Image (spheres, one colour):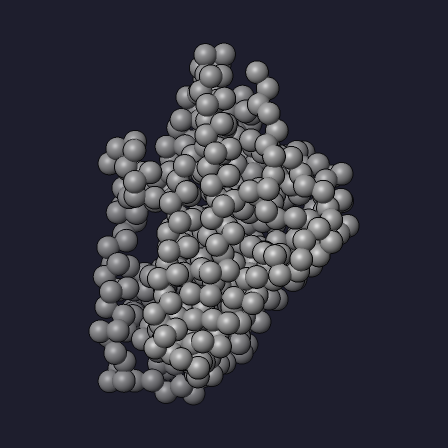
Length: 448
């Protein structure tokens, strides 16, 4: 599914500054913080605006992912190539995710953000995290595998589970590819449906400032700006660690792939601001796929890597898992052994795979990780210590996950030899000048 690339004009040259999406989102976030501080009760009543925007986006996730993956696999026409691209993506995901986990452990040991906290079992409020604990306990390995299989083909669309959608999309794409010429009508139909769904997303994205305002107003109204000061050491450490990971680790990967990580961040500025306001990277998944195609990544690679990365390449969540685990261990005075460190990394690698950018998913996977440490040196109830600030850290998790998946898409596309260097140079030469309104794009007619 290809779309025409809009001309690279400066945001302020073709329209007033106040009509530019990322400026609208910035203003909305600032107004949300102000309302949350001045009128907390009124701000908490704005929660439905953020919820409604996220619901609108999630409403379109299943059909867009299905159409994109099916079309991507079918357009390749070679199942061996599909397997090759998928294998390369998974290898990249595992290597970079492992680096994120290890970096979280190293920073946690060096900075010691939980040292001297002095929490005791009597002080821990187990009831506050009971819901997360029950979800984590239900998420056993077998249960996790079984949950990937939907009750029916269409149940995956109804439930919106990303892993279930990935399963039926891959199966459908493989079958259509095997049909050869008989499958071409289905490919054209799916491509046309994808165009419709992307147009709808383009309309919804224009509501991003309203959604960001409601979500941010509720967050500040509910938890208060003062919460940003509580446990500030952990929050600051997590944000700085994530920033270090993006600029150094992903920055080096980007440099070897022929682009600047800073220019890449400028290119996806709209998506970063929307994620900042909503704390969920799912809200920009369709938009991000379009951005990667404009950057020069091939349709087939984008269709496979971005959706898969939302479940298997969660760098921010991985950093959070190990860093938060070490913080809690230090807070309760637990002395972890080398074997327990290894278990934390191994378990976190597995439990993070289902956290597909949804707000709060990282907190649930943290509970599963704590419960799996041999000897239970860190009680799961200790999560109550960071429950109040998890909302602020979830924003950083989502932002880091988004950047990581964008970089992964470019890397795998280049690795596969399907990255358009001309487009990449053009975009990176002036990333701030690239338009982002999908709704304003004219689709390229489908060849008969």
